[in-house]
Length: 345
Image (cartoon, rainbow, N blue to C red):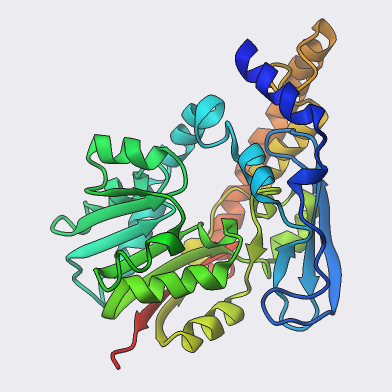
């Protein structure tokens, strides 16, 4: 265990976790309705950090959102060591295996555009941009992200220019500069998704395209798997938007939806993710620097859970294979993609 990292976490936790959550709101951030019900309540199943989180669902527009949501301090605490730092290498490996998904996203533009410039918002380490060049070799790809990975993407040459920070902060600086803006599994992480759509509208040139991919909270698997459904992704996911809500929000901002995909956007990890989250819940990593510290008992339990989980993982892979085939055949997956054109005034 990294002693310095563990000491920093102990200092953070000594002040308590109440400051990591804002006060609960009484209305839906999407439509303003007060018809709210609890959709799911879970601990941090991703890293096993302290805390418990609630997603509520609006009875009017069906929007699902974290309530109470993370504060800015909470965002820093729960994102730390996931995409960068201690967890960065593992996350990079996962992103590096998504080549087929990256290609599918890039190919969605083929019937509609031949872009010279493309900004990928929430680009991480730039894996999508690097893969998308096989489809669009003459396109300039830039990336924007809140994490330091965007600097690494720039150093690798996977993006031409990397912007570090919040997307709305760059809206005026980048106004009208891009023919395509993409947000792949990004919008659900943001505190104010409607402000992010406003920023995209500002950054796009007239006639440009906005490409979005999101988890689908209307997915049947969300109901079937319940709290262990991976796309709930607590505490990182702040908002999960039904496709109808996104279509309406885009129309309000002067966009016309030209393509929508559900089955092709499906991510084949429903059952595998559920097993992984259950295993983490039963036996968190004993070496996690925010934990109480490794003990022989904790190491023995972790080993036992890994052994018992192996056949469960194998079964999960088989079930996900069957589920993925069905999702793509029926166009009913756990995620959706939307492509919208910014109308010319």
